[in-house]
Image (tube, rainbow, N blue to C red; front, side, top):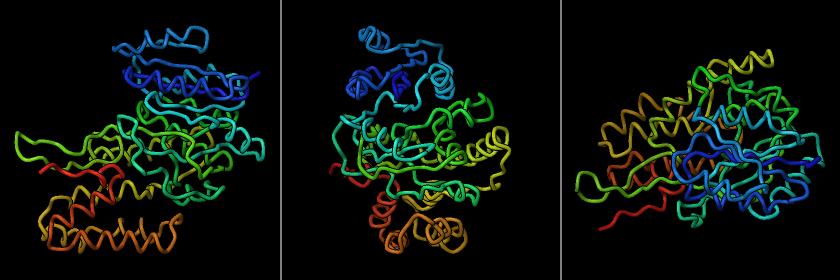
Length: 345
Protein backbone atom coordinates (compact mmCIF):
# COMPACT_ATOMS: atom_id res chain seq x y z
CA UNK A 1 0.00 0.00 0.00
CA UNK A 2 1.21 3.50 -0.80
CA UNK A 3 1.75 6.00 2.01
CA UNK A 4 0.30 9.28 0.71
CA UNK A 5 -2.78 10.23 -1.28
CA UNK A 6 -2.83 13.66 -2.92
CA UNK A 7 -6.46 14.65 -3.44
CA UNK A 8 -6.78 17.47 -5.97
CA UNK A 9 -10.10 19.27 -5.57
CA UNK A 10 -10.90 20.86 -8.92
CA UNK A 11 -13.50 23.33 -10.15
CA UNK A 12 -13.18 25.35 -13.38
CA UNK A 13 -9.40 25.78 -13.23
CA UNK A 14 -8.46 24.41 -16.65
CA UNK A 15 -5.74 27.09 -16.86
CA UNK A 16 -3.89 25.63 -13.90
CA UNK A 17 -5.02 22.02 -13.43
CA UNK A 18 -2.32 20.46 -15.62
CA UNK A 19 0.48 22.20 -13.71
CA UNK A 20 -1.10 21.09 -10.43
CA UNK A 21 -1.49 17.46 -11.52
CA UNK A 22 2.06 17.32 -12.90
CA UNK A 23 3.45 18.61 -9.61
CA UNK A 24 1.55 15.87 -7.75
CA UNK A 25 2.62 13.09 -10.09
CA UNK A 26 6.28 14.01 -9.59
CA UNK A 27 6.01 13.26 -5.86
CA UNK A 28 7.55 9.91 -4.85
CA UNK A 29 5.53 7.83 -7.36
CA UNK A 30 6.17 4.57 -5.50
CA UNK A 31 4.65 6.01 -2.34
CA UNK A 32 2.02 8.45 -3.66
CA UNK A 33 -1.45 7.99 -5.15
CA UNK A 34 -3.04 10.95 -6.95
CA UNK A 35 -6.82 11.44 -6.98
CA UNK A 36 -8.56 14.28 -8.85
CA UNK A 37 -12.11 15.13 -7.81
CA UNK A 38 -13.76 17.44 -10.31
CA UNK A 39 -16.70 19.20 -8.66
CA UNK A 40 -18.85 19.75 -11.74
CA UNK A 41 -16.50 21.92 -13.81
CA UNK A 42 -18.06 23.52 -16.88
CA UNK A 43 -14.79 24.50 -18.61
CA UNK A 44 -12.24 22.20 -20.26
CA UNK A 45 -10.98 20.65 -17.01
CA UNK A 46 -12.49 17.21 -17.65
CA UNK A 47 -10.63 16.64 -20.92
CA UNK A 48 -7.33 17.60 -19.28
CA UNK A 49 -7.94 15.28 -16.32
CA UNK A 50 -8.96 12.38 -18.57
CA UNK A 51 -5.80 12.81 -20.65
CA UNK A 52 -3.75 11.37 -17.76
CA UNK A 53 -5.41 7.97 -18.06
CA UNK A 54 -4.43 5.50 -15.36
CA UNK A 55 -1.70 7.76 -13.93
CA UNK A 56 -4.35 8.98 -11.49
CA UNK A 57 -7.83 8.24 -10.20
CA UNK A 58 -10.41 10.67 -11.61
CA UNK A 59 -13.81 11.35 -10.07
CA UNK A 60 -16.38 13.55 -11.84
CA UNK A 61 -19.31 14.68 -9.71
CA UNK A 62 -22.06 17.27 -9.57
CA UNK A 63 -21.14 20.65 -8.19
CA UNK A 64 -21.78 20.52 -4.44
CA UNK A 65 -18.94 22.61 -3.02
CA UNK A 66 -15.54 22.04 -1.47
CA UNK A 67 -16.86 20.23 1.60
CA UNK A 68 -18.49 17.58 -0.58
CA UNK A 69 -15.22 17.05 -2.48
CA UNK A 70 -13.32 16.74 0.82
CA UNK A 71 -15.80 14.17 2.11
CA UNK A 72 -15.73 12.07 -1.05
CA UNK A 73 -11.94 12.20 -1.19
CA UNK A 74 -11.69 10.95 2.37
CA UNK A 75 -13.95 8.01 1.50
CA UNK A 76 -11.60 6.99 -1.32
CA UNK A 77 -8.36 7.10 0.66
CA UNK A 78 -6.64 3.83 1.56
CA UNK A 79 -3.30 5.35 2.55
CA UNK A 80 -2.07 6.44 5.97
CA UNK A 81 -1.69 10.12 4.99
CA UNK A 82 -3.32 12.60 2.63
CA UNK A 83 -2.93 16.11 1.22
CA UNK A 84 -5.83 18.15 -0.16
CA UNK A 85 -4.23 20.09 -3.01
CA UNK A 86 -6.16 22.96 -4.57
CA UNK A 87 -6.25 22.73 -8.36
CA UNK A 88 -4.48 26.07 -8.87
CA UNK A 89 -1.64 25.39 -6.43
CA UNK A 90 1.53 23.33 -6.85
CA UNK A 91 3.81 21.10 -4.81
CA UNK A 92 7.55 21.43 -5.22
CA UNK A 93 9.66 18.39 -6.07
CA UNK A 94 10.44 16.40 -2.92
CA UNK A 95 7.59 17.86 -0.86
CA UNK A 96 5.94 14.52 -0.09
CA UNK A 97 9.27 12.96 0.84
CA UNK A 98 9.90 15.66 3.45
CA UNK A 99 6.35 15.38 4.79
CA UNK A 100 6.57 11.59 5.10
CA UNK A 101 9.93 11.88 6.87
CA UNK A 102 8.31 14.25 9.39
CA UNK A 103 5.36 11.93 9.99
CA UNK A 104 7.67 8.97 10.50
CA UNK A 105 9.70 10.86 13.12
CA UNK A 106 6.70 11.59 15.32
CA UNK A 107 3.07 10.70 16.00
CA UNK A 108 1.65 13.83 14.43
CA UNK A 109 -1.98 14.31 13.44
CA UNK A 110 -0.94 16.90 10.86
CA UNK A 111 2.26 18.06 9.19
CA UNK A 112 2.00 21.52 7.68
CA UNK A 113 4.53 23.33 5.52
CA UNK A 114 5.18 26.86 4.31
CA UNK A 115 3.92 27.89 0.87
CA UNK A 116 5.35 30.54 -1.41
CA UNK A 117 2.72 33.03 -2.54
CA UNK A 118 2.67 33.12 -6.34
CA UNK A 119 0.80 35.46 -8.66
CA UNK A 120 -1.77 34.27 -11.18
CA UNK A 121 0.90 33.79 -13.83
CA UNK A 122 3.06 31.76 -11.43
CA UNK A 123 5.52 34.54 -10.68
CA UNK A 124 6.83 34.42 -7.10
CA UNK A 125 5.75 37.44 -5.07
CA UNK A 126 8.41 37.06 -2.39
CA UNK A 127 5.75 36.46 0.27
CA UNK A 128 5.19 33.23 2.18
CA UNK A 129 2.38 31.78 4.29
CA UNK A 130 2.06 31.35 7.17
CA UNK A 131 4.16 34.20 8.59
CA UNK A 132 4.45 32.60 12.04
CA UNK A 133 4.99 29.03 13.19
CA UNK A 134 2.71 27.34 15.73
CA UNK A 135 3.69 25.21 18.73
CA UNK A 136 3.11 21.46 18.49
CA UNK A 137 0.21 21.57 20.96
CA UNK A 138 -2.31 23.81 19.21
CA UNK A 139 -5.21 22.24 21.09
CA UNK A 140 -4.69 24.50 24.12
CA UNK A 141 -4.70 27.54 21.87
CA UNK A 142 -8.00 26.57 20.25
CA UNK A 143 -9.45 25.89 23.67
CA UNK A 144 -8.61 29.49 24.58
CA UNK A 145 -10.09 30.74 21.29
CA UNK A 146 -6.96 31.34 19.20
CA UNK A 147 -6.59 30.08 15.65
CA UNK A 148 -3.02 28.90 15.19
CA UNK A 149 -0.91 29.97 12.16
CA UNK A 150 -1.50 27.60 9.28
CA UNK A 151 -0.97 27.64 5.52
CA UNK A 152 -4.01 27.40 3.23
CA UNK A 153 -5.37 24.00 2.24
CA UNK A 154 -2.50 22.87 -0.01
CA UNK A 155 0.11 23.24 2.74
CA UNK A 156 -1.40 20.63 5.07
CA UNK A 157 -0.89 16.87 5.23
CA UNK A 158 -3.08 14.77 7.52
CA UNK A 159 -2.87 11.41 9.24
CA UNK A 160 -6.03 9.82 7.86
CA UNK A 161 -6.99 8.01 11.07
CA UNK A 162 -6.83 11.33 12.94
CA UNK A 163 -8.72 13.28 10.27
CA UNK A 164 -11.57 10.77 10.32
CA UNK A 165 -12.23 11.74 13.93
CA UNK A 166 -13.30 15.20 12.81
CA UNK A 167 -14.47 14.66 9.20
CA UNK A 168 -16.70 14.11 7.18
CA UNK A 169 -18.14 17.62 7.19
CA UNK A 170 -21.93 17.94 7.52
CA UNK A 171 -23.09 19.91 4.48
CA UNK A 172 -25.15 22.46 6.38
CA UNK A 173 -24.68 25.47 8.60
CA UNK A 174 -22.09 27.34 6.53
CA UNK A 175 -19.85 24.35 5.92
CA UNK A 176 -20.17 23.83 2.15
CA UNK A 177 -17.29 26.20 1.40
CA UNK A 178 -13.95 26.69 3.16
CA UNK A 179 -13.85 23.00 4.08
CA UNK A 180 -10.13 23.37 4.72
CA UNK A 181 -10.98 25.54 7.75
CA UNK A 182 -12.61 22.59 9.51
CA UNK A 183 -9.85 20.14 8.60
CA UNK A 184 -7.01 22.51 9.50
CA UNK A 185 -8.32 23.56 12.89
CA UNK A 186 -10.42 20.54 13.84
CA UNK A 187 -7.40 18.25 13.51
CA UNK A 188 -5.59 20.19 16.24
CA UNK A 189 -8.18 18.93 18.71
CA UNK A 190 -7.18 15.37 17.82
CA UNK A 191 -3.37 15.36 17.99
CA UNK A 192 -0.12 17.36 17.76
CA UNK A 193 0.88 19.49 14.77
CA UNK A 194 4.34 19.58 13.19
CA UNK A 195 5.39 22.56 11.08
CA UNK A 196 8.04 22.58 8.34
CA UNK A 197 9.33 26.14 8.01
CA UNK A 198 10.50 25.60 4.43
CA UNK A 199 8.43 26.36 1.30
CA UNK A 200 7.33 23.05 -0.21
CA UNK A 201 4.75 24.45 -2.62
CA UNK A 202 3.16 27.48 -4.22
CA UNK A 203 -0.13 29.13 -3.22
CA UNK A 204 -1.65 31.01 -6.15
CA UNK A 205 -3.42 34.31 -5.48
CA UNK A 206 -5.71 35.56 -8.23
CA UNK A 207 -6.67 39.01 -7.11
CA UNK A 208 -5.90 41.96 -9.36
CA UNK A 209 -5.00 44.88 -7.16
CA UNK A 210 -5.01 47.71 -9.69
CA UNK A 211 -8.54 48.40 -10.89
CA UNK A 212 -10.17 50.99 -13.14
CA UNK A 213 -13.36 52.20 -11.53
CA UNK A 214 -16.01 53.51 -13.94
CA UNK A 215 -13.42 54.61 -16.46
CA UNK A 216 -11.62 56.76 -13.92
CA UNK A 217 -8.01 56.77 -12.79
CA UNK A 218 -6.53 53.40 -11.77
CA UNK A 219 -6.74 52.73 -8.07
CA UNK A 220 -5.29 50.05 -5.85
CA UNK A 221 -8.01 47.74 -4.59
CA UNK A 222 -7.92 45.88 -1.32
CA UNK A 223 -8.64 42.28 -0.40
CA UNK A 224 -7.49 39.50 1.88
CA UNK A 225 -5.72 36.71 -0.03
CA UNK A 226 -8.14 35.07 -2.50
CA UNK A 227 -11.33 36.51 -1.02
CA UNK A 228 -13.43 38.43 -3.51
CA UNK A 229 -13.86 41.13 -0.91
CA UNK A 230 -12.45 41.58 2.57
CA UNK A 231 -16.03 41.86 3.84
CA UNK A 232 -16.26 38.12 3.16
CA UNK A 233 -13.72 37.58 5.92
CA UNK A 234 -15.69 39.79 8.30
CA UNK A 235 -18.94 37.97 7.60
CA UNK A 236 -17.50 34.49 7.17
CA UNK A 237 -15.21 34.05 10.16
CA UNK A 238 -17.87 34.13 12.92
CA UNK A 239 -20.03 31.68 10.92
CA UNK A 240 -17.13 29.28 10.41
CA UNK A 241 -15.98 29.52 14.02
CA UNK A 242 -19.48 28.63 15.22
CA UNK A 243 -19.66 25.77 12.71
CA UNK A 244 -16.28 24.51 13.96
CA UNK A 245 -17.53 24.66 17.55
CA UNK A 246 -20.56 22.57 16.58
CA UNK A 247 -18.43 20.07 14.66
CA UNK A 248 -15.97 19.64 17.55
CA UNK A 249 -18.85 19.21 19.98
CA UNK A 250 -20.56 16.62 17.77
CA UNK A 251 -17.44 14.62 16.85
CA UNK A 252 -15.32 14.92 19.99
CA UNK A 253 -17.67 16.05 22.73
CA UNK A 254 -15.42 19.06 23.37
CA UNK A 255 -16.39 22.71 23.88
CA UNK A 256 -14.63 25.65 22.24
CA UNK A 257 -15.14 29.29 23.34
CA UNK A 258 -18.06 31.24 21.95
CA UNK A 259 -15.73 33.71 20.21
CA UNK A 260 -12.54 33.04 18.26
CA UNK A 261 -9.45 35.25 18.06
CA UNK A 262 -7.78 35.62 14.69
CA UNK A 263 -5.63 38.48 13.41
CA UNK A 264 -6.81 37.94 9.82
CA UNK A 265 -10.37 38.60 10.91
CA UNK A 266 -9.46 41.66 12.99
CA UNK A 267 -7.31 43.19 10.27
CA UNK A 268 -10.20 42.74 7.83
CA UNK A 269 -12.43 44.67 10.21
CA UNK A 270 -9.71 47.33 10.48
CA UNK A 271 -9.52 47.59 6.67
CA UNK A 272 -13.26 47.97 6.32
CA UNK A 273 -13.22 50.96 8.65
CA UNK A 274 -10.08 52.93 7.79
CA UNK A 275 -9.01 52.14 4.21
CA UNK A 276 -9.54 55.18 1.97
CA UNK A 277 -11.34 56.88 4.87
CA UNK A 278 -11.08 60.49 6.08
CA UNK A 279 -8.87 61.10 9.08
CA UNK A 280 -11.85 61.73 11.36
CA UNK A 281 -13.17 58.23 10.62
CA UNK A 282 -9.74 56.67 11.20
CA UNK A 283 -9.34 58.36 14.59
CA UNK A 284 -12.88 57.40 15.59
CA UNK A 285 -12.00 53.77 14.92
CA UNK A 286 -8.87 54.13 17.07
CA UNK A 287 -10.74 55.75 19.96
CA UNK A 288 -13.85 53.57 20.10
CA UNK A 289 -13.58 50.41 17.96
CA UNK A 290 -9.98 49.15 18.10
CA UNK A 291 -10.08 46.99 21.24
CA UNK A 292 -10.36 43.56 19.65
CA UNK A 293 -7.82 44.47 16.98
CA UNK A 294 -5.17 45.45 19.53
CA UNK A 295 -5.97 42.34 21.56
CA UNK A 296 -5.27 40.28 18.41
CA UNK A 297 -1.88 42.01 18.17
CA UNK A 298 -0.74 42.37 21.78
CA UNK A 299 -2.26 39.10 23.00
CA UNK A 300 -1.10 37.11 19.98
CA UNK A 301 0.62 33.98 21.37
CA UNK A 302 2.54 33.32 18.13
CA UNK A 303 4.22 36.66 17.57
CA UNK A 304 7.53 37.91 18.91
CA UNK A 305 7.77 41.25 20.67
CA UNK A 306 9.44 42.68 17.57
CA UNK A 307 6.60 41.60 15.32
CA UNK A 308 4.02 43.06 17.68
CA UNK A 309 5.88 46.36 17.76
CA UNK A 310 6.10 46.33 13.96
CA UNK A 311 2.35 45.75 13.67
CA UNK A 312 1.67 48.58 16.13
CA UNK A 313 3.93 50.93 14.15
CA UNK A 314 2.15 50.11 10.89
CA UNK A 315 -1.20 50.59 12.58
CA UNK A 316 -0.08 54.00 13.87
CA UNK A 317 0.61 55.04 10.27
CA UNK A 318 -3.07 54.54 9.56
CA UNK A 319 -3.77 57.57 11.75
CA UNK A 320 -1.53 60.11 10.03
CA UNK A 321 -3.26 62.88 8.04
CA UNK A 322 -1.89 61.69 4.69
CA UNK A 323 -4.37 59.24 3.20
CA UNK A 324 -1.68 58.00 0.81
CA UNK A 325 0.52 56.93 3.72
CA UNK A 326 -2.43 55.54 5.65
CA UNK A 327 -3.66 53.46 2.73
CA UNK A 328 -0.18 52.14 2.01
CA UNK A 329 0.08 50.98 5.63
CA UNK A 330 -3.29 49.24 5.38
CA UNK A 331 -2.29 47.46 2.16
CA UNK A 332 0.91 46.31 3.81
CA UNK A 333 -1.02 44.94 6.78
CA UNK A 334 -3.74 43.38 4.66
CA UNK A 335 -2.17 41.32 1.91
CA UNK A 336 1.24 40.29 0.53
CA UNK A 337 0.29 40.99 -3.09
CA UNK A 338 -1.41 44.28 -2.31
CA UNK A 339 1.87 45.45 -0.79
CA UNK A 340 3.47 45.20 -4.20
CA UNK A 341 0.69 46.81 -6.24
CA UNK A 342 1.37 50.20 -7.75
CA UNK A 343 -1.27 52.12 -9.67
CA UNK A 344 -0.37 53.38 -13.11
CA UNK A 345 0.10 57.11 -13.52
